[in-house]
Length: 145
Image (tube, rainbow, N blue to C red):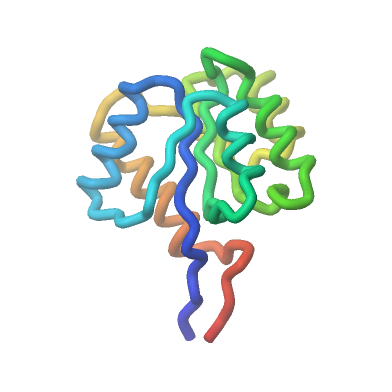
């Protein structure tokens, strides 16, 4: 029996052009066909999530250390709102600080993933991340035919 997957995009909240391009490169290299939307700061991401008629993201990749704002505060707002609280949010960051990890999980993070520095590991982690969230777990909005 196969799941009917949600049609929503992956919303990437990332202020670094380099990190965003690396994600797109990895997804293309892996042959992933998920639609991607990008917002460069938390306010823009929250505005996108509050747009009337906008497609609900299937997954949010959220950078913790945004130039304009704190990713953990954005996460807390996403998880506090009825309309968005069930969207899986993966914190995608360079911070291995235990305080940041704890703070994000307390705010409702579904996963906390360190951005790898070398491209082979980066590719492997993007593959594992997308496989887990789109092939393994059942997401809100999914149904059995």
